[in-house]
Image (tube, rainbow, N blue to C red; front, side, top):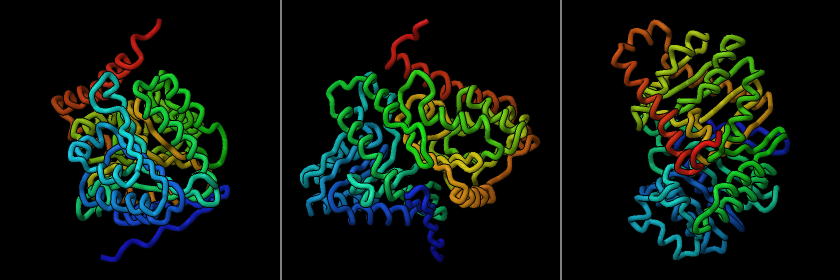
Length: 392
């Protein structure tokens, strides 16, 4: 099979942007970024697995360290647990790579996860900085093709000042994660400090906050005025307030949502389908992606594009550490809209009639239970463990 044509490069406010839409290209680009690094590498991933892709990235990081590049890797304590148990990271440490596990699995903060994905090379200067962000982890399943039933995902290569600006955030997070008992207050302060309040291309972060995360507040503001909205979300179980934004936008303009028809978590699909009836009544168009498992995180609001690690669910909105890049550019948005239209074409339209025919009382009961667990139970248990009881 012929490989898809390479994506065009867009220059926005001095930054070069290129979408990474297919799995093999993402792995090749990631390994090339590591191999071409001259001075520093900063890597941040939720899941890192000891498989072929994991070995390819590990070997590239070891090569970089051996030629004198200063390499730092942060992996989530839960997402890297199996690899750590098998001593997969030891050869990196032996080569001089700094490996930090974010919040080891057991403990009161077990439910707080670092969901971000970043590979940053030579971030000290704007003219050398290159970064890759998106939804994909380091695991074979994120670098295959739909024919192989790999995850459908999306990455973005960023070159220029935006990549340079994220360097300080990574270093701040690294210092926090290395503390024996890091305080949540300083983490929340860092998320707020490094989220950029203005700019054509700006970083927005999320984490364990008492209110909507910075990235979610920005999406909320854009949605309040948006006329044409497109969302691709692997996991969709938002708070009532963020659902209302979609309801209102659906009545005001056009809203299209592409969601998963299959993934690794059946309850997540039940939870998302619980929202369908209300959204359809507000003229929101819902599509379920058919070719393979969906893992993309992409929000398109008029001429504004959000790409990064966050889903449109309560955990991403309030709890997980997330990283999103907001790009306000009509030309780039038009290209992303073409990509979005292609994902819609590969999806099944969920009409009110189709949804009703598939939703008996038992199905609706399972959907309601899953939605409750994901939006109420998980949220409140995690907050109580880490913030304590609400002050009234």
